[in-house]
Length: 212
Image (tube, rainbow, N blue to C red):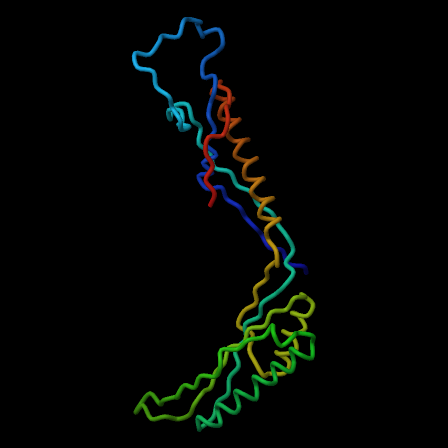
């Protein structure tokens, strides 16, 4: 079944901080002359209105998109009584995994391995070395999900490696992320409007937004 990825833009305390304007009913406002300040001042920065005139809400936006590539992480091993033979067996298995992936359309540049490391196996009773295990980790990027499934099946059938994990992603998430941001803003505005309506006040402009 096709897999989906969720790209979530959470405008944390999406401090879509929305200013509540017109906190008084119109009939309660009494016109009058504006007193002249003793010392005229020019304010050059935009200052927030006092907290009692602010509604702070969080908005959440979620967009679900289909992945267009998969990353497979595999473990390849070789065991023997000698370190040299363990290394040789691991290298042989690693080459087999490469051959399977190449035969299924994966390009060499989309495969990387960590190199082979060797660990001695010891007996618990006297710590005597009983053998060696050589291990390598291989990462394969499949730019087609059908190829990814084929690679998994082929490697499992070959018994040359063990699949440790598979993750899915999209090459360019920018459009989905922008869509999620817009959805988060709409969600925040809806919440703020509901709160303002219940309080009997009107909303003003957004005075701050924090994304996370």
